[in-house]
Image (cartoon, rainbow, N blue to C red; front, side, top):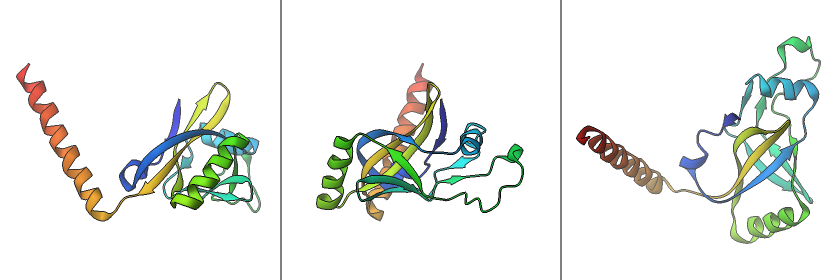
Length: 148
């Protein structure tokens, strides 16, 4: 079940490959995510050493947990990937200048997973082309729907 999506991910970036990563959270953060108190807008992932970290993802405090001192909703959170995947990402990010962005946050069984996209940023004119293409596709779908 998808709990959160990054609304700008597929518009601002060309996603070349996706990876599934686990995320390290505290118990109250897991409850907050499952309650829908999460946002991936403006979030990105980075490599620090041989670890992958999720930055700028907003996970609000769990309301039923009481007052939490020094809780930072946009704290960096560690992502769990296989060693070979991390090495592959290190090579591609450093050599090709690609970016690692979270596309969605979802449950898989009892676990929370983050879908990461290895992406290349789009230029402004490419974004305009995407908007035009979506409008044309929408018109075609509407005409096909009306013809039946």
